[in-house]
Length: 142
Image (cartoon, rainbow, N blue to C red; front, side, top):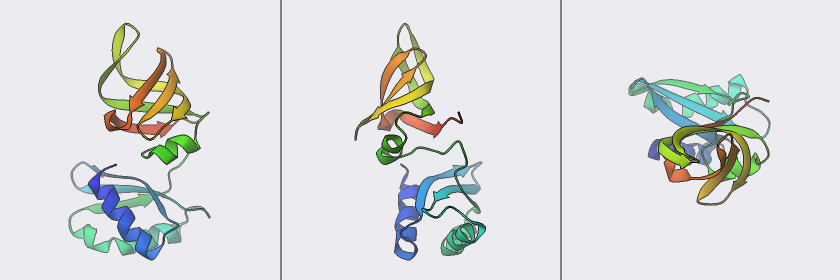
């Protein structure tokens, strides 16, 4: 998780603690894209509240606030644990050894998630990937 995502989570926790920040990323240097979730679902009004709460960030970035959709981002150990048994794609920061060749993109079933690693049953076999090595990850629509 990035420091920017941590800051956004902290700020939103003060105003609406039920909003979960799934991913906050800067795209193209000028756009801040934020995926959120809420126990009652994400509505336009929810996105508007988050945008208003983060209005000062609009001085540096254009804001995009939306629901996660079917290919929900996974950024925290709790996200991976919640979706054990589902299919996911995990992209690593650098190639990792699986079988005979290094790979940096893995697609398969989430079979485990500890505090340090996520375990994926992928085409090349079962691999444990440290969270620090994950560049991006998301569920795959089944």
